[in-house]
Length: 136
Image (cartoon, rainbow, N blue to C red; front, side, top):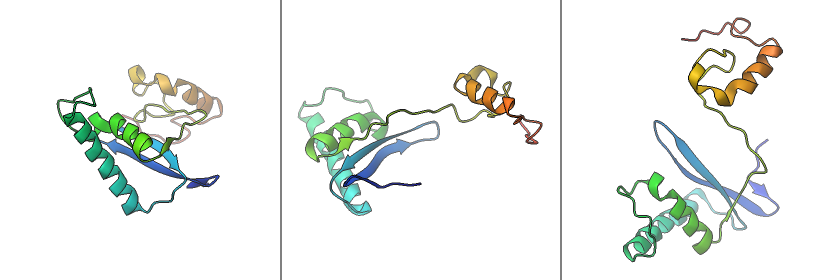
């Protein structure tokens, strides 16, 4: 089930991705924006961050102005100047996404976040062999 509106508030996401990582922040607003309107707001927030940096109002000056480096400041700008509110999950679960979820020996040194899931699945009969998994 997908939801884009909660109690008259609309959900928005801003973030970045790269070859190694990604980070997304969810926010809500009681105003409904189109994709283009939201993009324009994000662009204006980025511009405001740069302007405030030049004025000395933002102290965390990155060596490179990548979106990754200024995301927190952009989020601050979206909440303080544009009325968005951070949407904070009640709880969350995540894991390192590259190892097999079935094979406890696959990426053995990097799979601590997957151990409980692997045990859960293995105890229920889902193993590399039962699923004809090929892992390297």
